[in-house]
Length: 424
Image (tube, rainbow, N blue to C red; front, side, top):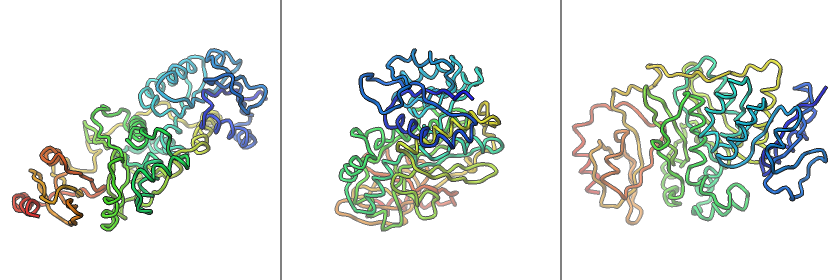
């Protein structure tokens, strides 16, 4: 039988991982697909650099040479940035190839365009590797969408940030020291901004939103905050109170609006993602029939990401693939698990000057601790803290995940409770 001809766009860490995985698992792939998968060409930036690949492999800087490979069936894309990745994959689909990508930035922006084009051309776009490395969340959500409606997604989507927060808590080290350690271990890039400022997790959340709900919120409406302002002292206090800081990406569609954020939050031992540590990723999906489904695994790295791309390959090329043609997920009026007509209250930890803070939200103090000139307060208040923050520009606020509940008529206590806070 003729081999399945494939090409690689990019030969950095991920591209090399795909090439290695196809060679080391050649027999397994042939057993599954009935044919051998062979990389025929690799697109690179520097054509003069020596690569450890088979002699027959075309190494080129010209994408047209890749498209002109006779009988090319699959294109793996592992380059960085929106362009030229989007253009390359769009042209590959036009040529009749299936495409598989690990490019989260490009796919967050252009994924729907590529998916629509692929459907029209009866081709396939694999994008498991764009969200959580070797964690098979794309396939899991796609399977759930056969019947279930999805209400919400909550996830730890960046292994670098999770590693930093875990080691700050376990070793009592400041942020900058753990970041240096992460860089030495290869968990963080020389320029770690995408990870530690929350952009990486944001792009991944937008991809999951498109898959789960058929659309994304306006990007500018999504609250995004990184972990650079999390301090060792804060983590120490939270640890004493039974909380961990997790950089959570969350999205819920409630009727005609999205509630979404990417930011540090506090979780206790009852929260499903409490035990996800170091470079692990995990995604919890709340569904109409299956309830809460959690998938956990390696979030990044050469082989976990390559694994996701190779599994996409087997999915599309198996003769009896049951892949969905198009996401038709919708959210009914009853899709929300909360009654938005009732006031919701939640728990927060606020950190500010020991003189206290002022605000119009209903507030009740549950716990407090003074550290030098700062006071740490665990409070219960209305879920919207916008006014509280507006009137207290220096206040640091951490939301406690999973602590939303219905208000119980405490509005008459508001003035008294605020006085208690102010008089600390």
